[in-house]
Image (cartoon, rainbow, N blue to C red; front, top):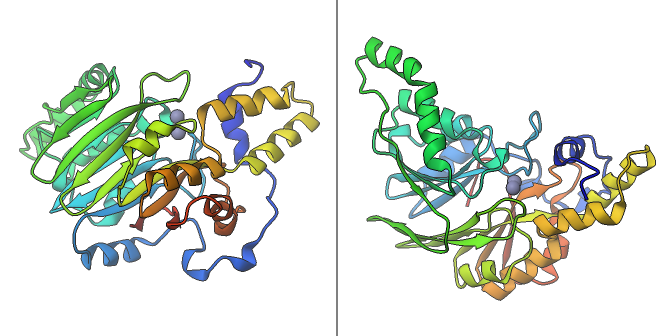
Length: 332
Ligand SMILES: [Zn+2]
Ligand SMILES: [Zn+2]
């Protein structure tokens, strides 16, 4: 199992060969990996009630792709709630037009770089742009230590700016670590709960559910197929679920093996399936949960040659509700 590294696997995904296309059937409306900031801002301007913006929809810590690493923001009653901080979260947040002083809480699903690497920059650059002391952060241990260490590392930087522009330094990020299933937090807008998911060797890895007054939105985080996710998302309006398109992953690894990489095909696929959810299972879980809308995100592999229809078809065999193939900056 250890004869390959996760790093080289994920890096290799970028160069994966083109997957058989069925592009002629994808609609113009959903083509392409991202919305423009103008589209996003227009959709938020006209929005009534709670909205979800997919900031980054790609799996894995791979820079330079047309999709950013995983992050989301929900906007409800003027307050913003970020879920995950993959690289790109700060720029993408800015592109939504949501003011930084609206940022109320940050939730991290698990400590993989594609979910947490820009947590610190979001706080520091966000503070310069208006994030307030008292912003909250939730996530698995050691989020507290991580936050303290980041604040220490950037103290001088923050202090220079604070002195220069007569700003109150960013000193108080309220961190709450989560290592068990149950209620997480509650405010005037939302009740948040979490469950533990299967993403070895990462422990704990979390899925979250947000019950706003007008809408409920659940996030699978990174996980192998799990009944507990269906249970958590039961009756939700929106389920954002990670998805792995197995044929493209198989094609990629077969290509690597043909080039002489010392990897066993079965062992590699077993590893991927122990950590991530194949398309068909995403459909089954969403159907079991009975959600209205399923958003496919954290796309594995995040390569543009896989069409929306290719992502959608195996899911639609099992899920009869609305299926949205996630795009960066898309408003749901
Ligand atoms: Zn991930
Ligand atoms: Zn992960």
